[in-house]
Image (tube, rainbow, N blue to C red; front, top):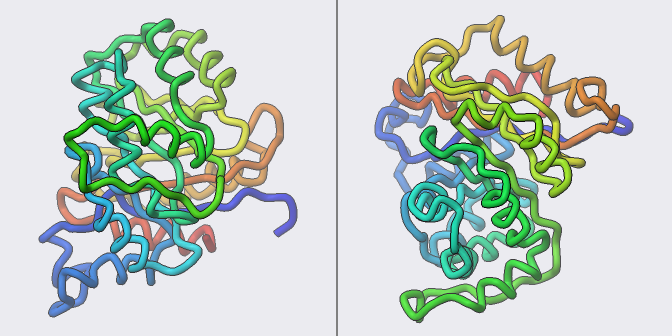
Amino acid sequence: MGDQGRVRVGVSGWRYPSWRGDFYPRGLVQRRELEYIGQHMSSAEINGSFYSLQRPSSYVRWRDSVPDDFVFAVKGPRYITHMLRLRSAGTALSNFFASGPLALRAKLGPILWQLPARHPFEPDVLDAFLTSLPRTTGEALDIARGHDSRLEGRVWLEHDEDRPLRHSIEPRSESFADPAFAALLRERDVSLTVADTADNFPMFDEVTSRDHVYVRLHGSQELYMSGYTSDELDDWARRIRAWADGSGSPDGRPRDVYVYFDNDGRGRAPHDAVALEERLGA
C-alpha cells in the first residue's frame, strides 16, 4: 500500500444484550463475545475504564481473547475528566495506569480523554494535564508506581518493552473552537477526536497529532441510536482514506486512523463497523 497509515475500525464496548442473537450468533457464550469481535474487527474501545478502575486480570483476559494484531483503545477515567476536571490528577493518573492497561502490552492503543460539555477550554489547566501524560509505556509504568493504597493487591506494575503511547481529547464544549486549543494539541502531539454526535455537540476535525487521527461515530441523526446509511459510510471511508494517505492532512503526512462506532443503542454499532471495515479493506 506504500506510504500509508494503518486504519483500524471497531466498536466502543462489546457487552450489549441487544447484540446477542443479532450481531452475536444465538447461543454464543458471553465470555466469547470479545473473541467474536476480534474475528470481525481490528480494534475495540474499552469504555468500562471510564466508569471505574478495571482489574489487571480483566485486561489480561481481554488481551488473550483477540488476535496478535488487534489493538485496544482505552477510555480514561471520568473521575479525572468529569470530577477532578483535569486538576490535581496525579494520584488518579497513577491509579489508572496501575490498574492494568499496561497488561495489554503490544495491544495497547491510544488513550481517550472525553471532556463533558460543561467543561470549558481552560488553556493552562489543559496544558498542565497534557504535559503530565506519559508518552511511552515506560513513563506510564513510572507514573503507575505512585498509586495509592486503594489499589494494593490489584496492580499491574510491569511492561515487556517500552512503546510509544498516544492520547486523544474529545471535548464537547463550543469553547474549544478557539484556535489556541488546536495549537496546544499540536504542540503536545495529542489528537483532537473527530466526534459525530448528531449535532448534539460540536464536531472538530482538525488534524493535530503527528501520527494518528481518532474518530468516534455516535450516530449522525440520533445520538447513540441511529445507524449509518450506505452513503454516510462511503463518505466516512473517503475521509478516513484521506487521513491515512496524507491527502486529508495539511502537511500531507500519512497517519494511522482509529475509528469506533458508539451508536449501540439499537445495536447498529457492530454492523456499521463491519460495513465500514469492508469498504476500507482495513
